[in-house]
Amino acid sequence: MAGIGRLRSRIATALAVSLMCLMASPPASASARAEDLSYTYEIETEMPASRVNSYSSYVIMSEVRANFNRYFPFRSDCLSLPWPQTGNVCNLYHPDPYPNPVQLLYINGSNFAFKSLPGHFEGADRFIRFTLFKGHFYPNRLYLRVEAWGPYTPQAHATITSGLAYNYWSQFALNVGARAFA
Image (cartoon, rainbow, N blue to C red; front, side, top):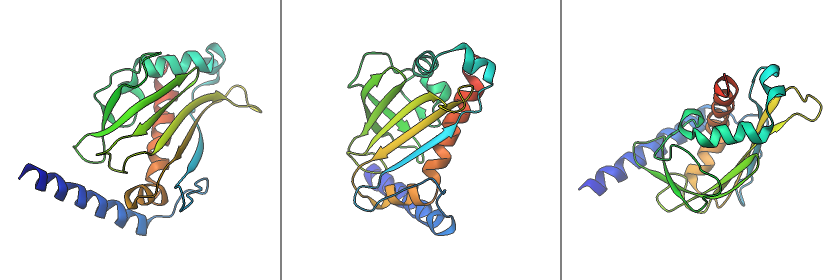
């Protein structure tokens, strides 16, 4: 019976996301392609220039990984992402109360990447990489680049085209800008 309740909750969540997809348009920077549903966003963190100039992107990302739950926009049972421990499984809790498992694929300087596992809301085998970098033309600004790709699922399509993915990662960027070394 618990499985039926979980299935009903996931169906209700998928319907809600689909409805939001119909009501909202994707952000201009999204490039969802039907064959693999990939996208890339580059979002300014709005971190004050004094802090951007005081720390390297690597040091800032080390802080984010060390205090993962403080910055990431979803609750997680992974409080930190310790380097170089890859292969760890983290459960993310959003948009529903059920675990959305991801595996930490790698940590490399100023970035890290996850792979979604079976049971994840958007489906298995989707990849997402997060990178912090200082602007090329504006070195006093810190940006979050989010790159995602993987197989088509209706839930992934709805999350991308509704703008929800962009909103989640914008919140992540703002959390980093407001909280890191503040």
